[in-house]
Image (cartoon, rainbow, N blue to C red; front, side, top):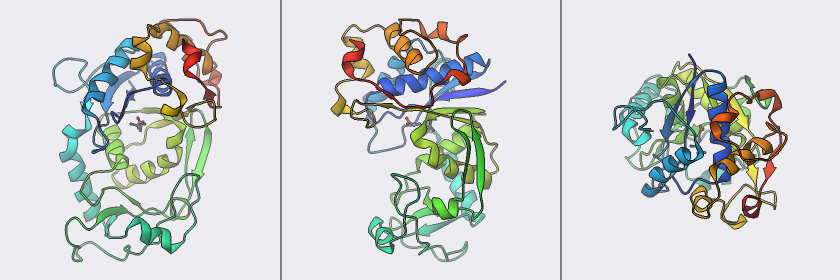
Length: 313
Ligand code: GLU
């Protein structure tokens, strides 16, 4: 049996765009008879807001999304927390050091920018110029706190089939460059945590926003180095504000907690999410569970949807 996941980042309130992605992940998993787990991605300190963890769980429950399991942390529906898994991430870093897959990098953002390599993907920074890449396992380490661990990517074409976006390919060395998997503070990066979690939790299908599409090649690189089975990917279109930019505070209050307080029903949000994704013909209120049968990847719109707070009042 396959397994999907809901992976909220509690760095702030969850908004309509997040809701749509979670609903799609829920429908996709249940439509295909998969399990679904909840993993709170709370290692991104200091951006994590402690109140946002419970709020994200409340939002998901309010929407009518049901998940299956979590660790033995206070109930069958308790989530996995990444902060509880730091030991696992440390072990993976050690494995990668021993395999000479990562090297300590003391470069600053400025150093990398000054090296002048061109970024390939939109919104991505310049390619890492390889300044620290000559290090190999056994060489002395720089002083603690002065370096991050940087992953050596392959100089070959990597490809995968995305359920929504179709065939994707990239040469990680030419288009992404070596990337950090820890910060200088020692914090673990999202990339390493998510790949290890998905592997160890038996995730077979990842449904997430298409802003993460370029990062998937980093994830494939990490999975390959750690000998982790790769999940199937479905990168779903984002929800944008009326100015065509990614949904954010400036677009009005689209926080789910706010809409809830305003008396908007969860069925209203679900109906909008289903219709805006192309899964139904009319934007009418519907319970989340009722959409499971109707879910169909082929019907899903490939384009981003624009929403304003007033659309749901
Ligand atoms: N936690 C990420 C987010 O909320 C999603 C990461 C993932 O699905 O891989 O944007």
